[in-house]
Image 1 (spheres, one colour):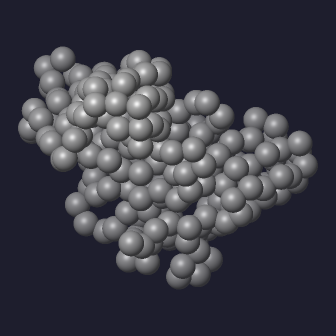
Image 2 (cartoon, one colour; image 1 turned 180 degrees about the vertical axis):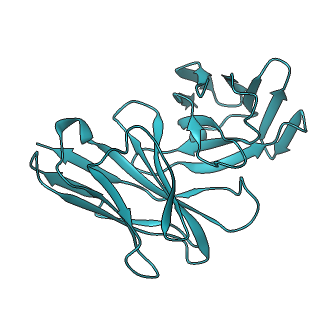
Length: 112
Length: 115
C-alpha cells in the first residue's frame, strides 16, 4: 500500500512535443505529490508539487494533473526541450510522517 | 540559492569497514533525511531526524546504521560494518520547519562503493 507505480520506464520525445509521465498510488492517506527531476550525477530537484484538493497545477511548461478518484497523477511537459532530458520521479507522502515514497523513475530523452 | 552539500562525493570502502557520510543541510532547516538509490533503481527512504532524534526509520535502517547531528551544521550517516549490498548513492535532504509537506531539498549524493 506504500507503493507508487510509475510509467513509462523510458520515454523518447522530439523537441517541441509533449512528454507525459503517469503515476498511481494506493494509499489514500497520501496528501502531497511532488515531482522531482534528476540529472546524471546530481540529486533529485523538486520540479512541481500538488495536493489532492486541486485537479491541476501548472508552472511554466510543466503541469500536474491529479485524479483523486482514480488515485492517479501525471506530469505533462509541454514544448519539450533537449535540456529536459533527465530522469523524472513522482513521489507521495503523508502529512504527518513526511517521508517521500518515490516511483521507479522515467528516463526522458528529448531529441532535437 | 542555499543548497544541501554532501561529502565525500565518492567513497570506496572494504566490506566490513565503518563508513561515515557527511551532510551539511540548508542552514535554517530543521528536518533532515537520508535516502538511498541503488544503481538504476528508485530512491528509497532510510531515516528522518528532527529535534536531535530519529522521527522515523525504514526496514533498511537496521542496527548497522546510525545518524547523528554532532554540531549545529553537520548531519551524518554511519554504517558500522558495511556489506556489499550497501553499495548505492546516498542522498541527504532537509526541509525547513513549518507545516508538513514543505519541499525537501536534496544534496547531490555520496556514491558508496563496497569492495
